[in-house]
Image (cartoon, rainbow, N blue to C red; front, side):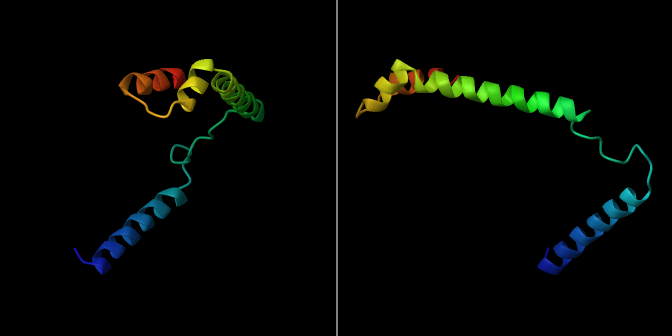
Length: 86
């Protein structure tokens, strides 16, 4: 397939999508990601709290700091690192 045929295929697909979105039926419209602004705020706060907890666990982990100070790593060290990140 040459470049012009590929580009015309993309144009055809884009035109089909545009025609479907113009139909205006509620089933075709994408659903909102969050049900309300409160839900959005709550979910984002939850994920941020999980991030902060994981960051704190990693920063205060004596096993991880011990691993990072090692010059040579073996297979067990890598397994320990992956277990720490879980």
